[in-house]
Amino acid sequence: MRTVGIKDVARHAGVSPATVSNVLNHPHKVASTTRARIEHAIHELGFVRDGSAASLRSGRGRSVGVVVIDITNPFFAELARGVADALTPHGYAMILCNSADDPGRENAHLSVLAEQRVRGTLLSPITGSTPRIDLHGEPVVLVDHPAATADRCSVAVDDVTGGRLAVTHLIEAGAERIVIVNGAQTKRQCADRSRGAHLAVEGTAVTLEEMDVGRLNVDTGEQAGEALLRAGDLPAAIFCTTDLGALGVLRALLRAGVRVPDDIRLIGYDDIGLAAASPVPLTSIHQPAYQLGKVATELLLEETDEPGTHAHQQILFQPTLVIRESTG
Image (cartoon, rainbow, N blue to C red; front, side, top):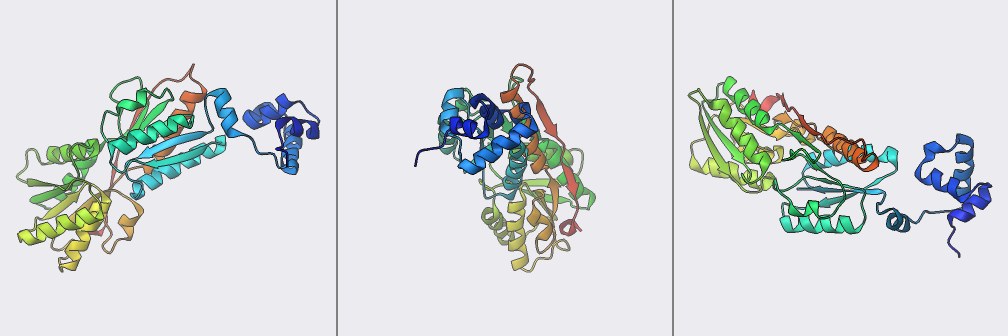
């Protein structure tokens, strides 16, 4: 069967091809009655627009790339939900890529997205500098990472304040010795949360120790908990810089018969849905993941659709403390 084209739809609806094109690309410019007639013709004829051809003509597609560090982390799933909800009213789709903490994969994803003529890219970078993002030409908004310069949009959370909130809460609960279970300090989030924790103990008699477990998830958190148990001298409290890591620590502690919070207090970071649903509801530092994704997408669309009036913004959200049973 011959492919149905814009001219066929125009002939069927009794309008010009340019009017059909406007309905597809700028529907607000077409009167509602005319738009309804064209949409009916599209449905009757089974017309499907050739997105690839349109992308080649305009140099931009109707999709947005999203590159995250760890797609298995519910924090990034919630962030992606915010992106999708912001894109849907504009008729754009999301291409979600997982760098898995691998710079090579991150760069490969950015290259493929550029080849696909995405409208722009939302990037949660592994490190502060991702050299290829300036080579592809399309707008890039950094997500969960502040921009180092004023010539790029970014949306992030003040993780120094978050780390400080977490440890201050443990100190106020009476903890005199605290262990931080952290990821690699080369990651901005881990370094900032650690810095905030150390700021919280300045001028106090509280002892702060740190365990760097590399990539922090449930498994490495559980291993950290087992290592603390083997050492035989549990601290008064543990601050884990992700909720997934904290859930792993909690699993190790509960399996060994350690009571949380009676024997040891535990706090996580991110406030994912599983934090409230864990065997001992987990106190956590809340990050507005959905808002991060939604606001970052709005900035990206503004930059792509209104380049003449767009002003780069570096937005920094403030985290909040959510107290549950794991800290008493």
